[in-house]
View: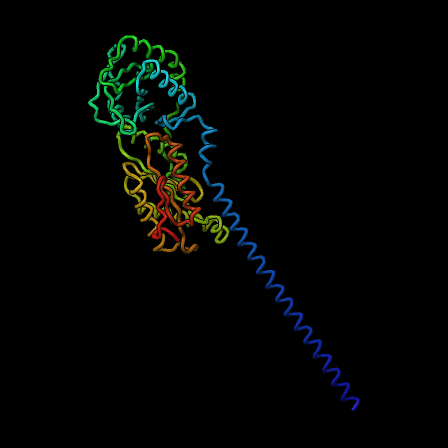
Amino acid sequence: MTFAIFGAAVALGLGCIFLFALALRRVLVRQELVVETMLRRYDDRLAEFAQTLNDALSQPLPARILAAIGDGDPQHSLEGPEREPLEHGEVLRLLEVARASTSSDAAIAMVAEPNREPMLATVGLSQAEAAQVGRLGVPDYRGARAIQVSFSGESEGPGGGAPLRAGLAVPLLEPPHDPGMLAVLTRSPDRRFDDPDIDSLEDVVSGTRPALESSFALREPDPVPELDTLTELYDRRAFQALLDREIARARLGGKPLALLMLDVDRLTTLNARIGHLAADGVLAEISARLREVAGRSDLSCRIGGGRFGVLMPASDSHDAEHLFERLRNVMHARSVADAGMVTLSGGAAELLSSDDAAALLGRADAALGLAKGSGRDRLVVAGRTIARDRYGG
């Protein structure tokens, strides 16, 4: 009897030890699962935070800050392949003084150089008028102090105002440079320019010419557009040069120009999930698809990271919208290896009469920021939102 009780006690004790060990194991496994879950959530939140931070850093500066650190006036336009600070400030000051000294309605400065897009700066002209005057080119002075020109009134002024009627042009530079021209323009059909006006323009030019000629002498040749090695699109430096060039061509030809900015959604999260090498493959695949859907005249560039820019000559914001829709359809139709479904957000802007390169790029970047902030995988056009259901997530 005693042995039976002893055996039962031993068995009961062993059972308790087994149950305790089992309970302890379950507790440890549960704790391990809790830690694993916490670490996974931590990784997800860290990736989301990194993505949010990346999106915030990619936002353009507010217009008031850009205005505070820049010297551009939205009523002025300056086109050309270079933007030297001296040249920009001197030309605009020259135009303002020339217009005021002759009591004219508008002024234009033009310099044409071999194998380069002309530099064209205007004050008081609409985009159509700037193109009209630009098509006339630099006059052949043949030793004359000045050349008077007349206009048929085919282009309306800013805001539908009165058209140009007459102008007076004087040489802007001296040999060995192309003479260029500084011209003042009037909208009055009765206004006639005379010798005092020529004297005023020559005085204005004489004070500015040395600085302008020094600035032109320091200008470097146009950079040859280079390709990004990963995506085989134009690289960031080429994008800046092409942007300036296409703006100048649009001005001189009187044609529209659209800029479409693209950014891969949640690229930081994608890098964390599949690694940088695999993410580079995703960018290369996106670039290949962009080349598939872009038009023959469109200039696709990789700005950096997952950001792309497409310059669309002779196109408007509706053309940019259609390009984005084609690209979006291709991205939704086929997943990308290693990454699955990848989406892009877009921002588009049309060239305005008051735009320089910085202003056009700033408006397209601002539209892109709105697209990413409103849900991604959609397009926002500067001045009007295209974030309807067919674009929305």
